[in-house]
Structure formats: structure tokens, C-alpha cells
Length: 515
Image (cartoon, rainbow, N blue to C red):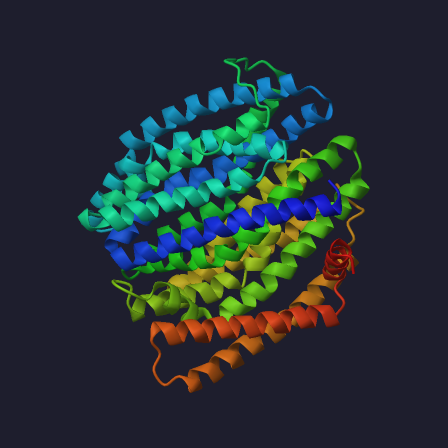
């Protein structure tokens, strides 16, 4: 994939992710307005822990496992064999996830007691009920994510990226029209949304030329390879979700709303990551796999460095903005209905400390794909487990003095450790990685981000003095103007610092426009 093709693929995914994330925040706003940060939302978020964990981790593991294998057969011109392997994997995945759903529903009470030991009996009972409703969603999640991997291998990104957005829309509809009858309808909407996210990808799968076969041959070497790699990839990609589980474990003994505050803050932090970073990681992975198949480590290293720089140029200023505008952003998006000023302060505090590690979490999304492209599934696993230990130790150390905010800080510290370790150890596979080039971009982006943060803070404070009252309309103007000023300063700063990736992008735009 050329630089231009990579850029086009990334832009397509960004557009679809943007739609999905906007709908995701509408969903969170609707949920916050309807239910607030209360025991019922704590119950829903805890009940969704396992299905969401499997969606983000097992789903990503399935995508990561299938892409290199299908890519290999497509490059060899053996599509039929590639589709047969994909079909076998899909068949066994659906069967396994069906069994897992049955076990999860039957053992929901035990699961709830394990992940939220500090819940009261009332909250625990509600969590168990919601868990039973949502657990069947893992069947459709597993099949849907595997289809996403097949589409990505064929470089069909749009519909797979949009599927979560449609799922969010279904949830919004359920909350608006049925939410007043109880939070169980939010859980039911979550299940239906996952079903729709699977079905919406089927036309794209047909368009990609996929031919399904009723085959269950586990003896095929590539099928065995996919499932052999699945466990270490699953565990390696589980790190962020294990962080969340650790948060919920420690936060279940804190004040009411702590779990919900961490959840809302995490969703805010994940907005730029889900829109931009995931787009870069998804677009770059098939290309990394192609370079790995060819044995072209030089091209692999160049592509990876380009991806890492793109990620840093996005996440550093985004994190800076979220840190200085944490309270007004949370107030603007969530403070209405049952979501009061106390919930705003709790969420804003968690958001500040989550944002410290945003750049590292983003780097990890790209770095893990580089390891999987070169068929090293164990190093991310070892680093991931050691970062979990860092997270647990930091959580124990910080939760007493900082409460739920200490848990957010522990997540950030663990993510930073993981990113540094993964980059340093990746040099074993890719000695061609240009650290000086990456460090130069990091320095420029960091300097520009500091200027961005200062501009955002000064702009907001100035706008605050202009408006005596602070209703939602005034707050929207203050936040949007501050963000716009900060974005302009960042763009000017990064241009003045002559960042190579930005200059190349501008040159491509000029050439396309005929300048």
C-alpha cells in the first residue's frame, strides 16, 4: 500500500469512526441524562464488562489472527483457499461463542461476585439480571469481528468501521423510547445493537468476493495456526480491558458513581483514539502484514514509523486539550438530568489522569499490530502481563489517597511502561526502526501541544469572563471557541516546526488541487 493509498484508507476509516463515535457520545449523553451516575448505571457498566471485554479483546484477537493468513493467500492468488480457511475459523468461532454465552448466562451470579465484590446485594442482583440479558451478544460479536478481519484483509474498511455506529444508534433508540420502563431495556438494546452490527457487514462481505463453505477441518495447518495464536493474542490485547476490570474491582468499594465516572471519562479519552488512532492502526495492519510476508523489513519499519508519528501528532494535542478543558467538556456533554455537578467533578478528575497516558495507549495499538505482522505473539503478551502488575501495584498505592482518580493515573502509568517496553523490544525484529526520526516528531508534537493547552486554557478563561451566566448555549460557545483557537495554534506551530509528515500531506493536497 503506497503512502497515498494508506492515507485514503485512513481517511475512509476516520470518517466512519467519526460517525460511530459521534453516535457513541450521543448514546452516552442519552444514558447519562436518563440514568445519571447511580447504582443502576454502575450495575449496567459492570454487567457489560464481560461482553465488552470479549468484544474488544477476543474480537480484536480474531481480527488480528485472520488478517495475516487471508492476506497471505490473497497475495498468492489463492482466494478460494483463503475463503475456506476463513469459513472454518468462522464456524468454530460461532460454536465456541455459543457455548461461552450459555456458560456466562448460567454463571452470571458468580461472575458478578468476582468482578464487583463491593456491590450491595441490590446492585449485585440487578447486575446479574442485566448480565443474563446481554451475554448472548458475544455470539454476534465474535462472528461480526471475524467478518471485520476478512473485510480488512481485502482492504474493505468502511462498513466494518461503521457497524459500531449503527449499534450505538440502536441503543439510543431503545433508551429514548423504552428507557423510562427500566434499565433492562438499555441492556436489551445493547444485545440488539450487536446483532445489527453483524448483519450490516454481510453485503460488504459478499461484495468482497467471500465464498462461505460448510467446513470444519481443524487439521489445516493455517487454521491450527490461527487458533494456536489466538490465546496469546487474546491475552496480549486484553490488557486495556483488564485495566478496566481492575478499575471496577477497586472502585466497587468506593463512593457511589465511581465506576460510572471512570466509564464516562474513559469514553471521552477514547474518542480521539477511536476515531483517529484506530483508523491508522486498522489501515496500516494489512500493509504491515504484506511487508512481513515479503520479508521487506525496511519497508515495514518505514510504514510503522509513519504510523507511530501520525498517532502522536493526533493524540498529544488531544490529550493536552482534554486535560485543561476536562471540567467544561464533561459538563457540556453530560451534565443534565440525573447527571449532576458532583458527577461532573468526579468524571473530570478521572479524565485528567486518563489523558496523561493517552499517547501511550495509542502507541500500543499500533505497536502490537507490528508484532503480530511479524508473527511474534508472545512479546506483547509478556509485556502486557507485566504492565498489569504495574497497574495493580499503582492502583493499590494510589486509590487510598486519590480515590477513583488514582485508578485512572495507575492506568496511564502502566500504559506508558508498556509502550516504552514494546518499542524497545521491537528493535530485535526491526533494527531499521529510525528512533531519531520518531523522537524528532515527538518533540515537535509535544512543544506544539503545550502551546495548544495554554491557548485552550487562556481562551476558555477569557470567554468565561465574557459570559456572566453559563447556560448550555454559552458553555458550548466557550468550549468550541477555545478548541478552535487551540487547533489553529497547533496547526501553525507544527507547520513552523516543519514536521515532515504534515509537510508531505500538504504537498499531496497541493498536487491534487493543481497548485
